[in-house]
Image 1 (cartoon, helix red, strand yellow):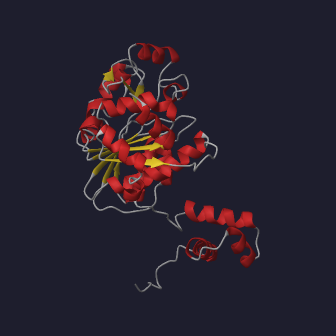
Image 2 (spheres, helix red, strand yellow):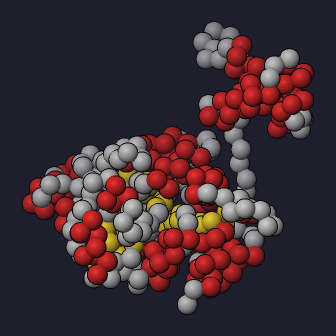
Image 3 (cartoon, rainbow, N blue to C red):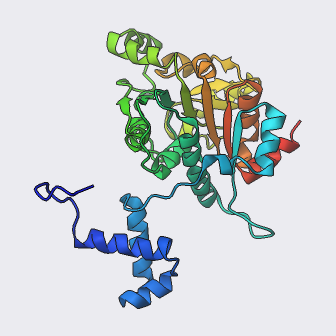
Length: 327
């Protein structure tokens, strides 16, 4: 396609250099040291340039989601739990030391980003949740437009020390898919149930919540109910409230709502103060991509599977093995 010389050029010499470094590394297969020698710069400089290429979208890396779902572990998960597909991330080969949570979550997010592209279809309405795991998925998403997609924020606005504002996840994924985006213009958790109910009936918010009842795709994770749960860290619930929920059977947290081991809602605070998708509306979504990081989420993952709250599951290798061993 011919370039319009009259149009402003958004790029510069540095961008062109970054693009050339990316081609030498990803296209020609040179090592970072070889590129550094060729360009008379240090290897750390090349490392930083390649990172900037990825961060700015100068180079995008995409792996076919169908291939990621073809492993033996993936097929075993599909067979055991009646899933449409399962995607398993791997950071360790052979007897190498198990990765830490940060490294494991980063690789899982990359795999989940490819799964999103595998699951989302033209014309879909896609719900996106919030949390550390979904934030990592959003940041790992490559730019891959899908025709006529609408993205909806599934939980009201919330900020914590761990995670940026909840609308950020939906907006990032919408931008990568070139989709329209509907954010949920209300706090995730209100100070009283009366105020929450009043907001839920406001016409604009009610319309946004109604969209969440008819999702083609829901993308979410599940939190655990241990003392370091994000629900407590974000100030959404007090420790004693979480303890009470656990005593009543809660073993996982979906969009600030508790569920039990069978995937049923446990209607305890802060449930009545939440402005977010309902558990039953998540269950009703045609395709449900659930991304779960860590073997410590085993009970929460089992609740998702028991409750038929996932059609597509993305987990790390340790959790996949634990799920297959569980009764």
